[in-house]
Length: 183
Image (cartoon, rainbow, N blue to C red; front, side, top):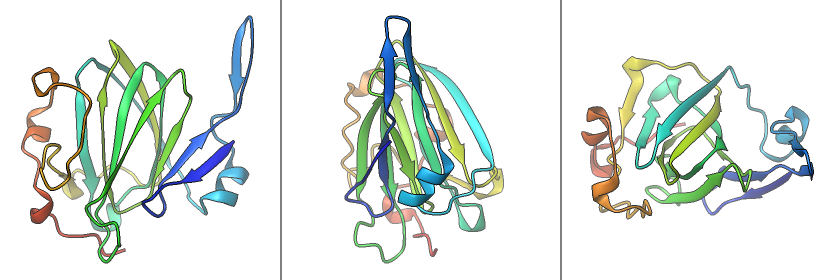
């Protein structure tokens, strides 16, 4: 696997090696020892999966306080733009984001540390999105950062009229309404 840390400290693009032939391919999507050697100690406690159609935008979600989550995300079918926003108090990249295309074709994964908001939008007809988390879901600690906050300047790569959001995601908070993470 190739590990590349991004401009936002602690955010990594991980590119597994694929071994293919006429039958298809094989890859190791997670290898604990190799992950820890590059990223550090993270104890994943749950795997999640969603299936979404074109234009669905999920996020930008985060959990506050002790319920904060680190995530390792990937797409096993389809294409998405995956976004992580730094909400860590005192971080030199506070309020900055990284946007990465994840797809079945490129096999990339994105590791997002605690203290970040996370979301994605589906570019293909459908997308199967899988992710590991290091903390359980806590509805009382959940919050949503507004996906279209001008302070973030995120290019979701789709026309606004094509975006499909849940009611909750459409009511997200702006960056200036968010209390930074004190990790």
